[in-house]
Image 1 (cartoon, one colour):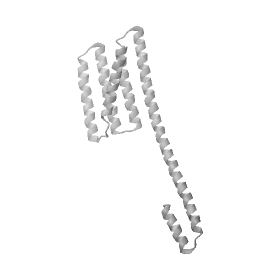
Image 2 (cartoon, helix red, strand yellow):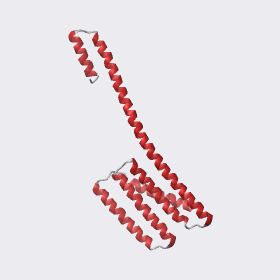
Image 3 (cartoon, one colour):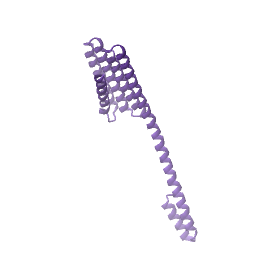
Image 4 (cartoon, helix red, strand yellow):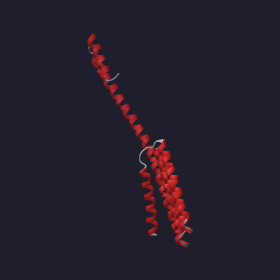
Length: 192
C-alpha cells in the first residue's frame, strides 16, 4: 500500500509540474506547436505501452492517456486562462491519477483490491471537491473585490461631495468676484 501511495503521489506531482512549466501565456502558433508536441509524446508513449502486456500495459496506457489529457488541459489553461480552465486542469489531473491508481488496484485481489478501489475513489472525489471549492472561492473573491472597489469609489465620491458642499458654504460668505473665484477654485480642487 505504501508503494501505491508513493507512486500515485509521484505521478500527481509530475503532472502538476508539467502544468507549471507552461506558466506563460501563449500565442496561437505556440499553442499549435505545443499541441503537436503533446500528440507526438502520447503517440511515442503509447508505442512503448504496446511492447508490454497484461496489467503493466494497462497501467502504461492509463499513464500515457493521463499525461496527454493533463498536458492538453494545461495547454488550454495557458492559452485561455480562466477560473474554468484552471478547474478543468485540476480535474484532468485528478482523473489521470485516478485512472492509473485504479489500474494498479487490479494487481490486488479480494478485500485488498476493494479497499484500494475505495481509497482511490475517495481521493478522486476529494480532489474534485477541492477543485470545485477553489473555483467557487475564486469567483466569490472576484465578486467581493468588485463590491469592495465599488464601495470605496462611492465613499470617495460621497466624501468629495461633502467636502465640496463645505467649500461652497465657505464661499457663500463672500461676495462678488471673490465668491466666484472661491467657487471656481473649489470646483477645480474637487474635480467638478
